[in-house]
Length: 406
Picture 1 (tube, rainbow, N blue to C red):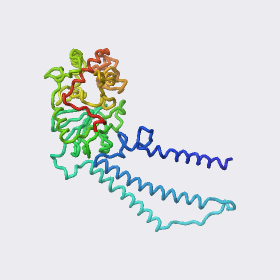
Picture 2: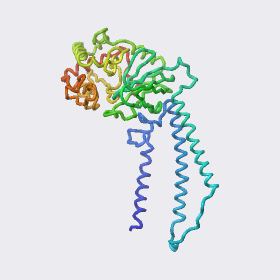
Picture 3: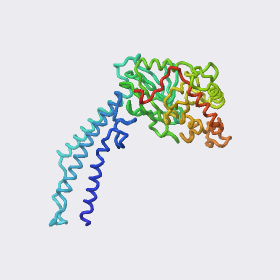
Picture 4: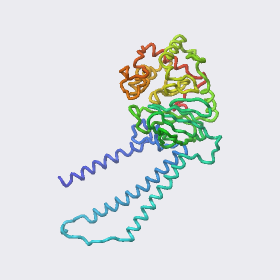
């Protein structure tokens, strides 16, 4: 029995492996596939030239290392089978000894170096490409965006167009977008898998990369560098639009959505209760305006996301929740985010407030520089009013993008 037990286990493993192949090769997430190559953040589904170059480099590396695995592993397998001890062999016999073979040794060194060069050329080419926009694009073609990382969200400053947005990067398809990466606290990493690789946001310096979407689409990205409690919830979305649609979006983002020097919405939906929205505006001014800005051109005083066009964004809490409105105007995810943001994104400043230097207890008034929503004591009806108010912070012709838009 002891002789057959290892073979039985090997047979079981082979059966399981063969049975799992169809699931592993599945391209659909709906049928439980282990390898959904077109998933939201799959690098195997490139939609831009940088991502295409990087997946090509991956495949080159894969084939080279697969060849090495088969060559070395195959030689090893042949050796242990051909030269294993057989019945009748003298276990004390010492085989004929060899003391080096210059031709084989030099050949292995040359072959290894050649394989490294095969991998190195596209690798270094990709590094250069990631930082330098090809000369075929003129400076007029390039869109400049400052990407500013905070714990735990991304701010996008459209330098030439004079407005800011949060957690949703909208770009024109077919045109290069130069990203200037900046952090306001710890190290973050910008990663938009279907358009490009990762690049860190480092304190005290500006790192630069560029992206280009081949065609209109909706993409998911995230911070890829551990940056504290809610690093895993630091997501963002990117939307690539046709040129005309992009220009229209820019014009809308430059438009103010509240009356000058007030929180009253300029564009009130006919479906909303004006009294409820007015109450929401009052609550926003008393609880939110200190940190959040409603001016499209300005960042919030405490480094909080700009909410001038919040009503047309597709996500909440840095891409973690969906900004979906029901027919009656309610929004369950937004209600949860306002009522108890700490349950969604632990440690966020919106809930705990801003701590004094070296202090960490949000429940100790002596540690708190500015209190958060944990001290606001908002009722469910108050939150409903804020939800109704935030829904109206948008241009009347704005389109709320989603994956279904494309």
